[in-house]
Image (cartoon, rainbow, N blue to C red; front, side):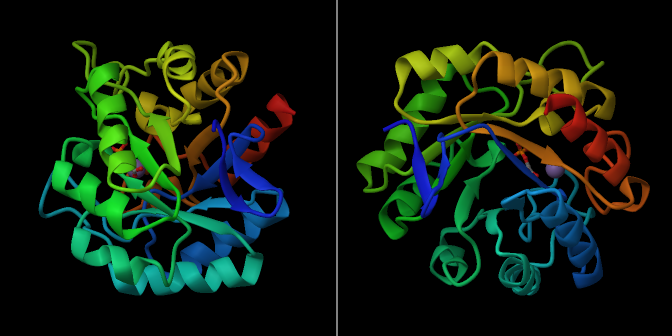
Length: 252
Ligand code: PEP
Ligand code: MN
């Protein structure tokens, strides 16, 4: 297969797509600002911003839930985006069809076999499966097979870095996963340099590397209008508008 259809003429795996957006949807003003900016720069797939956020600390912002999805839908309709956003609970799958186009399974849930099976059985929408942070490539591929066996082969794999002993970067972006996945599977692969490095100054080099390795789906990047104020993954990880514009200029 090697490509997953989103719309007439729009595929993941067709050309190197830049998927971008905030870590989380925070409010409609934030999404409007980001949506307008990305639309102006030709971005077609919005990293919706998670509405359901898997956070390490239960006291951290957990996402807006369905309210967040409603905000995403307004932005989607206004700017004609395709939206990718995470689903953590199988009970939300049916409801999510009203709002989002690509169902993300996050790193923490790659081993959640019940969720994988439910996703495969309950939606035909594309599923973006992130690599577990301690998953081998083999385990990751098997997780994708769980979805496929359950009935959905519209699967996109996303390399988002694995844990290592070195905490200089948030994770260790395993770029060799790109050629390996291309050789071993028929799923398109995208690279997430934001979670893969956790450092904004490394996003551009990581994107260049993903291009050089011909990651067939492209990359997914976190941006925010005001990273310092972001409710999740702002700080040193998300790019601001200026940095994102600069990245586009450099890679074009
Ligand atoms: C995310 O994409 O915001 C996310 C939570 O990523 P990961 O599952 O890779 O940690
Ligand atoms: Mn994030």
